[in-house]
Amino acid sequence: MAQKQYNVTGMSCEHCAASIRQEVSEVAGVSEVVVDVAAKSVTVHGTDLDDSRLRAAIVEAGYGIADTVAA
Image 1 (spheres, helix red, strand yellow):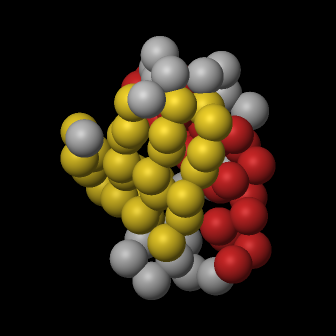
Image 2 (cartoon, rainbow, N blue to C red):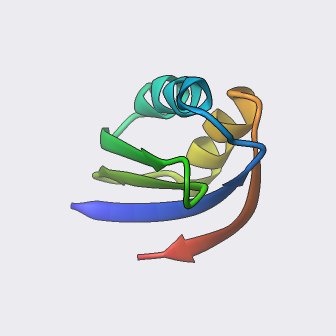
């Protein structure tokens, strides 16, 4: 199973986390989305994860991406 982690800007509450979870979990191949509001990070688990689609889902939810940590 693959994993990708993103540092997200503009996220400050559980409502933010829920919005990101919903958008990212709709991307093909995603099996789990872990959002840490305090750390401002999103970790995505799944198979054949498409980085550009994951980034687009986070942006669609209304947030930015500071940088990416490949895992």
